[in-house]
Length: 320
Image (cartoon, rainbow, N blue to C red; front, side, top):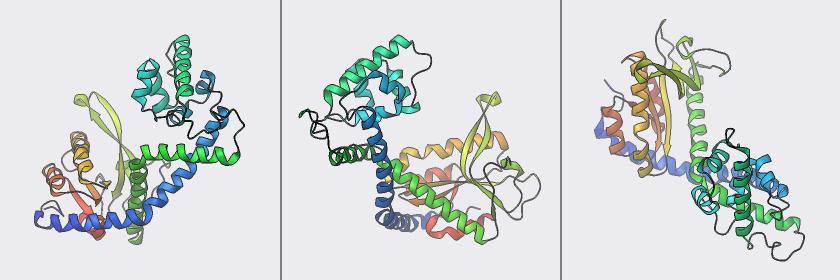
């Protein structure tokens, strides 16, 4: 018998309450989360400006030494350049730019002369397209004032944060969800395990829990094993030896479209867990936000159950 996945008559009511809860949180806390990130990003941008003499000396050696500044440089042009657009304009290898953007490093196996040539082309494009409305000193051939540098840094930081707004909000919401689970469990006598104590998920003592724990699963017919992260791993108080903990994924969403794009993620994860540990393994969801009946029906068909954050006491129905 399910907890919520077998009660479709309640789904629409719960969806409405979950949307209301998410929106209330978003209005109250999302601007703060965004501002906090923007403050740090502004500091990072100021550092990048300093390393390029405030956009007056964009050299390939600077990008080689500080590859993390490339995203700042892309947002400093008019118009701002997406990764693929920069690759096309500069005529550089795809892996050069994407390695710098995603891994913050020069591709280690790339020919050094090809790297130098590529970075030179990138620097030329950035210098040519630097936005004079942001870096007002470029066309005036004058030393910028501190107030001008700060203003430019905040504009570029806004562009950077705007490009990753959804991840910023999602990360803030996930932290809040895990905090809610922690409070609920600790109130009932559960203890949080340190992620560094070396305890494996299947060796957790009864009455303990952990966050973002790696769980090994088998792939490719059992030939290869990889770790998959699970948001919350809980070993119930009444667990016996060799019992598996209960797994939960914290999920939040600010629109219905995005959830339907992501709904296969949990199906893949539970399939991997069942293949490795058997059909008794429990992977459930902790939901807050825009999860419509189509999403819920898909997850229910995969044997996945859930707890709504607005009814967090449903955790107890899982034997926790």
